[in-house]
Image (cartoon, rainbow, N blue to C red; front, side):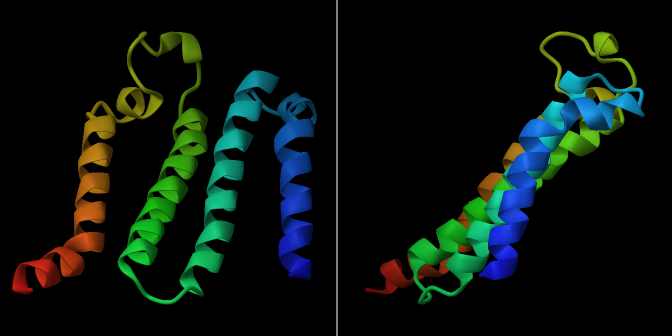
Length: 133
């Protein structure tokens, strides 16, 4: 618990108070750095919650929670990674996500499809068991 508490404390300070300092030595604005830090912070919080969820008794709700935290971690990390790959935010067309712009692919739609599949896989055993009863 000590390590978790210290990691959370450090994470919240980094995510909220260090954007200006980190941005000084980079090509990114403080706003861009703050945006990336918030994505990383979101992923870290989801990973911490996942550790607690994994200690729970196996159930359909645990499976849904694990899938949700997996999705949250992926989405949280997607934010800083795609933003790091965009040199000039002004080049990203409006109504286009940064990941779609960077890859030239419909990443948002693929991600949503994979997330729905992850949820179906998570609840599939429960759905199958319900048909047998």
